[in-house]
Amino acid sequence: MPRLEELVLNNCRLRHVPPGLASNASSLKILFLEHVKQLSYIESFPSVVELTVNGCPDLERITNIPNLQKLNIQNCQKLKVLERIASLERLLLEDYTMEKLPEYMRDIKPRYLQLFCRLWLLYVVAAGQSGTEWDKFSRVEHVKAYAPDGDNQRKWYVLYTRGDNCKLDSNISSSTIFEAW
Image (tube, rainbow, N blue to C red; front, side, top):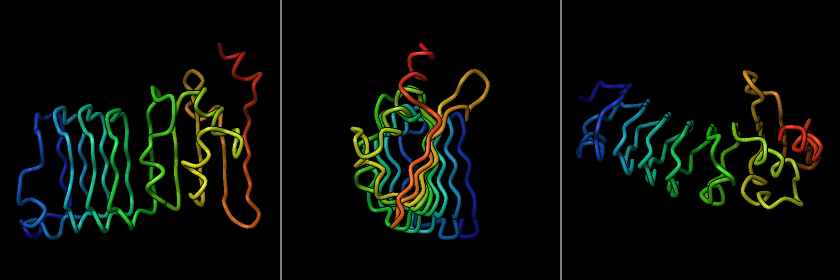
């Protein structure tokens, strides 16, 4: 499979990606895993630059993907470890059940983070330096975080830019939270 550039695995019961796939698929650039229910780890894909994992409830770690630039994580609540992904540029994280940002956010430094979460977590992110989640996203250059209201997935937002003129902008306040309840 040296010419395989994109692989989609959807609705299957793999416990792990078959051994040798990474080394035999040397041209693999895009890996898309959706509803791979029993998958617990993804590791050692040196050629992959884009990875999407969606609805993989048992996924616990992603490691040793040195050229990974774009990572989309959606509804993978058990994911605890992201390591050896030094080339990461963009991270999309979507999980409306999480109550705090994942601990692995302390270990990575993407340039761009796009976050879709519940309103309460967005409120904590909007607190900036005084919030409990600040150290998990403060090193990211650009953050766009959103919480839904009905059908509008981007009703509430926090926009953050790191740099000499650090800027945090948001349209939520404590009254927003109380009105939503």
